[in-house]
Image (tube, rainbow, N blue to C red; front, side, top):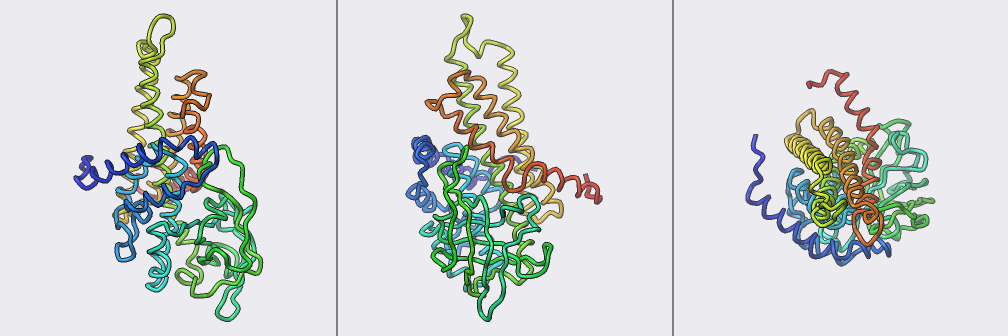
Length: 382
């Protein structure tokens, strides 16, 4: 067991950290305030290989590991958590095409996704199916060489802006075995979008409903076989949970550093805040829990890379712990700033707003507990 990063890992960690500091952090407040989708910054990240982190190299990907991705996303999230989270979603959609698509599909979509000439969205959640994803109702009926889609998807990051939508739709009967994965391209007749959602956070990425009304899509756009969709979705979510955990840790680390610096500047009752033992203890607990979350994340990422049979449970554990701890560290950093933490001149409140949704998406933390409990009760080794 070696916790030392390799030379390559330290190199792309430094690249991601510098990119976040120079091209994300200085603009993150404006992106949030004005709800700007930062296309130029995203394409600059793609030039560094961050748009196809674990996509194979023959179509422009970086072909890195899940652990490598966790290291990268932690750094990016320190610059702008919302934008880093969109890059995670884009990577997840691209990975599904790379892993389960055929050679023609990979060549058709992935080069432009890996350069971010095109953007991708992942469409699973529906108005009536959130945590109960297997109950989704969007229907895809076969008609010759096409599927005709009817239904809608809710809370889709990149909705109305993305070029490629990787969609889970029902081609068969009820339950997970009736779900298939189909790619729908922007400007397909019958594809439309709902209003841009007004959100608490994640304002640098647009969120909207994706609506299908007799939307005709070629059968050639189906990823994998009919009935494979739910398995593809769940495998994608294992990795997505790792990435969002890393984003929580990166945001929390940035807040912890800002709280530490602020405590050395701010005086009350004649002393700097960092001279009060109670506040020292709070800072120590924040740092300890953050490190524990990172170690859980790295263990889960390694398990997924090695196809460990317990990987899904480890990913759920890491997601539950890291997103809870990440939000709590951001919130405690805001508390240590007092009233200044609550105003937008300081970035702390943005990190708090952006990390709150991490406890909900990629499977709520309640669902993570359900996954863990089922694995344990089924006899998974502890």
